[in-house]
Length: 190
Image (cartoon, rainbow, N blue to C red; front, side, top):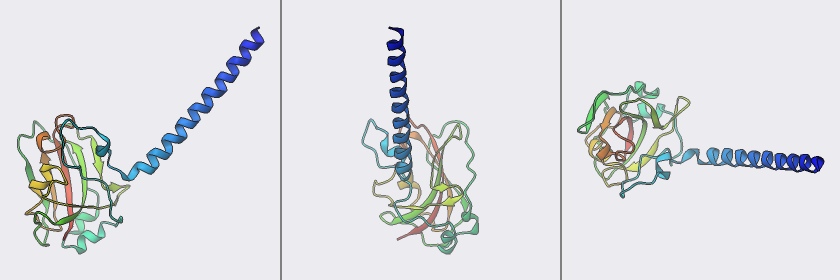
């Protein structure tokens, strides 16, 4: 009887091991294939909110195109984004690198690079920079495709600018994500 018990335990162990391997392989392929999707897109929201900035749907390019679009060579490197202090009570825009291109207007399709952190902790939430290489994405600004903080802050900025946006939770993804800090490189506007 103990031989049968050992045999049953061995079979159960092999089956459990095979199940673990199958789960790990499945997770690997889901993570690898889903790497171009925005993590925010899979998060449920209590109210209907505009879509988040999503990693590139456009063909990835290097940041050198930013300088050609009226920006600075400073935009060719990934920004170092530091956390803030206190609470963000209102949308704040700070120009880090002035752009020399055209002024962005609501309704235009913008192409940007961005880095997003939690305002207080500095924890990176999302970025279009992958291993130091920019992968810009495009979306229409000022029409509700992006968070209200972006729709309010980006029109009026110049192409080629690097701006820092401190966005209160109410103009971002709500209290679940809290206050946010973005650094956004405006590559183009059409």
